[in-house]
Every structure is written in structure tokens, then in C-alpha cells.
Image (cartoon, rainbow, N blue to C red; front, side, top):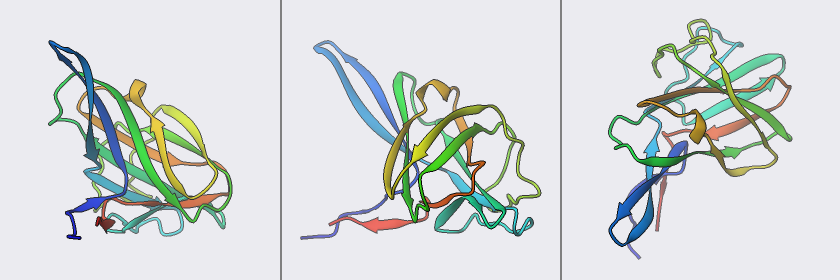
Length: 172
């Protein structure tokens, strides 16, 4: 069997578009990958982790780790009706309570640090992770415009790793 193209199993948004045809209603999905992703750490407040293949999220030994993701919908036509945030978690320490916060300030994957991270905006939603695996989080009601920038964090002593967009897996 030939190897197919490499694909990301990572942080993506799945967008369901409604296509109205003369024969009825059909829906298709489009995948949009994060154009930027990084995490920041209160342990090393000047460190940048934008090139890392995994994103650390949580609180461990009194240090906080926050994940930042940026999605650009500029190339997507209007008409979508559902947006799911698809996250691949592993090394989950326990049941984890995570928050997704809106980020309105600008940041760059290769320069964001704890000391220069943008301010957190409104909490968009909270969710629980109870094991390693893939999770779909519906963020449809929170996406507007062409940019979706978020922070994923927790207020509890718990942690997990999230696959980054830099992780590639070969499909067979």
C-alpha cells in the first residue's frame, strides 16, 4: 500500500458549510488548521515555545501553562453553520476542567512569552477532559469574522499535553 500524503492530527477547526443545491440541502466539511499556536509558562516567563511539537496546558508545581491558538478564516466563504474545535489530548493527569478565553490582542507564535502574552478576554466556554484522546468542542456561537484567537487554560492543579500543528503523522 502506498503512503498517502502527510496530514495533521492536531489542533484544527472543522467547519461545516451549507451548500444549497437545486436538488436539496447538502453539507460538506472543511478543515482549517491553526496558523499560529504556542504555549506560555509562568516558570520561565521569557521563554517562547512557538516551535514546540506539543502544547503544555495546566498548572503543575505552582506554575501555570496556557495554550494560545490563532485561526484565520479569510479564505473561507460565508455560509458555514458549525465550527468544532478538534483537540488531541495526551498525558492527561486526571479529569481536567479547561476554559477557552477569547483573545483580541495580537500575538506572534515565535515571540509570545508569559511576560508579553495578550490579555484574556471573555470566557467563551468551559469543558472537561477525562482521558487521552480526541475531543470536539463546539465553538460555533463564538466565531465571528475572519479571525478566531483563543487561550486554553485552567485554574486547577491539573495538566495535559495537546498535539500541536507541527506534529505530522503519515497515513497509510
